[in-house]
Image (cartoon, rainbow over all chains, first blue to last red; front, side, top):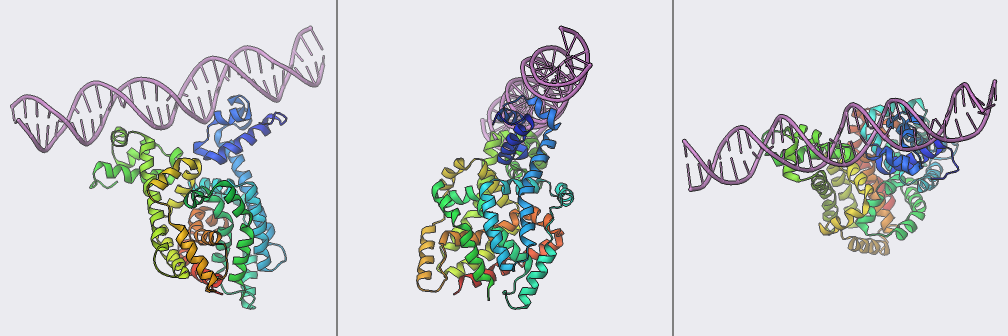
Amino acid sequence: MDQSQNTEERITAAAKEIFIQRGFAGARMQDIADKAGINKAMLHYYFRSKEKLFEVIFDEAFGTLMPRVQAILSSDKSVIEKFEDFADQYIALISEHPHVPLFVVHELSQDPDRFVEKIRSKGHFPKLSLFIAQLQQEVDQGRLRPYNPVHLMMNVLSMCIFPFVAKPMLKAVTQMDETTWNLLMQNRSEEVKRFLKQALIP
Amino acid sequence: MDQSQNTEERITAAAKEIFIQRGFAGARMQDIADKAGINKAMLHYYFRSKEKLFEVIFDEAFGTLMPRVQAILSSDKSVIEKFEDFADQYIALISEHPHVPLFVVHELSQDPDRFVEKIRSKGHFPKLSLFIAQLQQEVDQGRLRPYNPVHLMMNVLSMCIFPFVAKPMLKAVTQMDETTWNLLMQNRSEEVKRFLKQALIP
DNA sequence: CTTCGCGTTAACTAATTGGTTAAACCATTT
DNA sequence: AAATGGTTTAACCAATTAGTTAACGCGAAG
């Protein structure tokens, strides 16, 4: 780990790597300390416990995923433009943090209830109602084919996020190598956008 | 656990629940023994080690996911019919085992290389080349809009699987309750099929 | 009835792991 | 230069956990 950072930053950087790679249960405090290049006691000095440290990392991980959604959905563009923005920006975002979605999804599934209150308190609930209203309006105007708004959003989210979550499985099953995979992912947002437009525009 | 089964079945049934719920690192042998209603030593008597037991469970989980793909893709139907079959059957299958996909994807991401050989040896590689050829052919005949076949398959897989993988996150973010979720999922395959057809048929 | 052997159990071991402590370190203040 | 107080370290502790062992139960074979 970069010696130029202060201890706290070194710890969070190391913890981020270890937790995101191995999950809470699989992460070892000693490994985090080693990666940060410090004594294990320092972890507790700065963060008290494994759980407290984990919460910091989880919050940051979740915080990188959610606000972007809100920003895109609340612009003044049309539904299709918003979906296109979403595909572009979200796939680019995840490409930079490819392990974050699986980490978040896995830890959230370990104890769903524990996180609901936190998510709400941090303001990570995107205001979907406005967007759904807009969606309904464009359907009524005949500018979109009629779909259930929730299913439609799931479709977009799925196509943007799932390939990264399932990368090891998809690579294994299709016997793709890393280079082929990277080339494929470079085209991902264009393909998703084309697919979406064909499905959406009457 | 059901007392009527023999010990080995009781162990695998209990291990399946614990491993799929908590992952390898989060699972405790004692918890598996408790759930099976037997002594912890029996786990080692029947399966030698945690890893050996885990492999049995993982293989079974992976084995419930993959063969279905192969069966659907190698029928003699058209691409669109195959995708429709896939959406119907796969969403129904996952609905019965909703935690399996996240389990498989998470464990596979812990150590991707370890599983490639196993997957190959068990014959879980679907023969995609034939299906891709069929896809190309139908595109050339103008029966399908032109898409990259791999991206297209990713789109279908994503829309069928991701909602189950991300259920806790989606429920949290949309503030859906369990009943609403279940109703939504009952319509999932119909919505996916409609969406797919609109995107695919020229 | 005794013996044999598989299945089972309670108790135990060794290693791991999260967490603690007391002393050392070191820059700043007095 | 002595005192101060935040930071860091090595050693330690207690709990957990995968795995082992030796004895027990009990039906089947002799």
